[in-house]
Amino acid sequence: MKFLPLLPELYVTNLKNSLHFYVDILQFVVEYDRSSPPFAFISYQGSQLMLKIASISMLIFSNL
Image: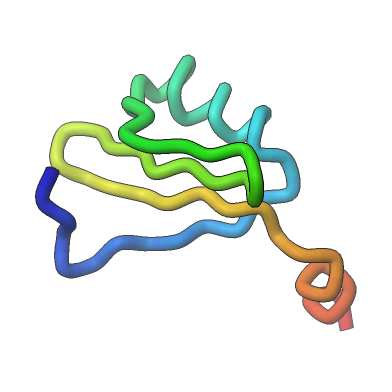
């Protein structure tokens, strides 16, 4: 698979729920995933996204 010039990396709080939304509802395809640290690379009709678990510090400091 060729990587696009712009490849967004989205930080999520729950990878399982996010994958359910993107794959089961929006029909994205999982191209690659790993369990530790949780990560998924998904695609849909030429678009590509990376989903990654947000760290605790990211969650705390984003609310300041």
